Length: 340
Image 1 (cartoon, rainbow, N blue to C red):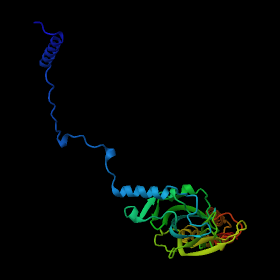
Image 2: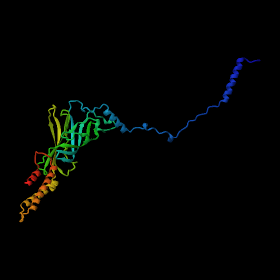
Image 3: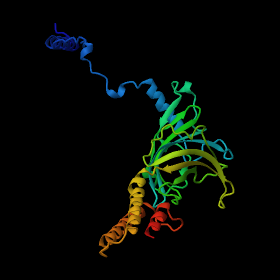
Image 4: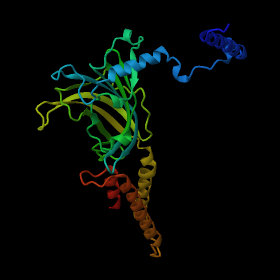
């Protein structure tokens, strides 16, 4: 008895599938592999956490200078006068140039004011109460030396970072070597005494914008380095209010006075004593009796030698004293009398 065609086809398909299943191997089982912690790849440097203090400092810096305008005066209203306090430290008198009437001074300055736009709450920034920022980032009062003989301030001044408190108080420290003009009276040279001064004021802002004043005890000489030729006998500070034709409001300034007395030791031993000795020799030679033989060559030689010595001393004095026709120095007048 023959089987139906459909049943034969079904049996044939089942046999082929069973044979294929026996010929194909089973897939291997993949087991998980555990890597020791010492062999794991270390995290990259970019994923390391930043310390909290540094993060707070960065956040504070971005908060303060996000929309800060250093060109504008840091007040809440334009009609408010900004108080600025100045503290002056006289470090050293480097040189006194009598010929050019210039005094070279090394000094320190401290400026204090309040910036209303640089305030913050320490609780929001990790307890930070002060921050150091470059002085070029903030507004600064344009305080200059009015009687400065060298207007190239950038080469003679060092300006460090500014210190800002959370209350908005700003402290700025400046160190400068400046040349100031000083009218020197040389009538009593080399026993003279000079009075010179430094004038500090704002160059563009009058009294309605800045209230400039000196801090207490700003005329101390705690850090002063003594000069070998000039002795500082007095040092005072005084505030002035000056009115200029250009501006409707007066300009406040701070003036520091210095009284300098010259130490005459060098000039006494190099000019005064030699000139006095030559004068005595000249007088003695003048009253020396004539020789009985009529030969006076020694007396003439002595007079010529004294005259040449006086000329050399006059040249030395002319190198020290400026060329001026206002006064005749005491030592020049004494040497001129010795010629007669």
